[in-house]
Length: 172
Ligand SMILES: Cc1cc2nc3c(=O)[nH]c(=O)nc-3n(C[C@H](O)[C@H](O)[C@H](O)COP(=O)(O)O)c2cc1C
Image 1 (spheres, rainbow, N blue to C red):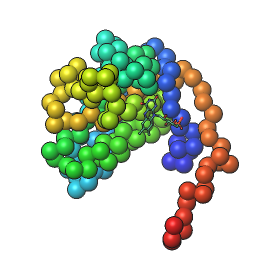
Image 2 (cartoon, rainbow, N blue to C red):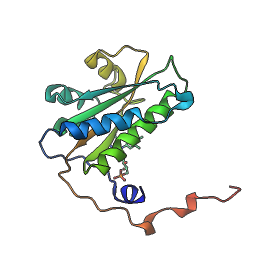
Image 3 (cartoon, rainbow, N blue to C red):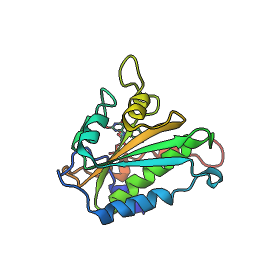
Image 4 (cartoon, rainbow, N blue to C red):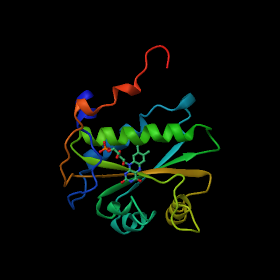
């Protein structure tokens, strides 16, 4: 696990190839194995590999989502706010698990923040996606995880750059 954590970076450039079904199955299984508060599993995951839909999803925000246009897979992570008051935490954990599982399979991924972000001055990124994918409004959209075969190399963060000052012992 520490090797995965040491080497994972956000990857935003992907080889234009679809993903092997076996790899997709591993990621899907990992998502469904995520822990959730009170084991409610308030999430719904929309696995998007339709390139036309990915292109539309990549326009969800003015910045920070355009690279999804060139990804072979985007996982739209939604949480049912009527089922759990901590759907944000649950969906965040599922999102990072999808990223770590992808990395362990040799894939690259990047989180695209949707909750609390704007599409334009009139509608939220969340509403734009709910309209596009016909998602009911009680299913809140937390993130999209873009996944693909990496087409860029990034250096791992060196241990010296870690901010050990963020760690506190017993008292702050
Ligand atoms: C909650 C969260 C939201 C993020 N939102 C975006 C985003 O909308 N677009 C993007 O390109 N990257 C996004 N990222 C990726 C971060 O920019 C990235 O993780 C951070 O810069 C550290 O780089 P690294 O992942 O390569 O270590 C997000 C990451 C997190 C955890």
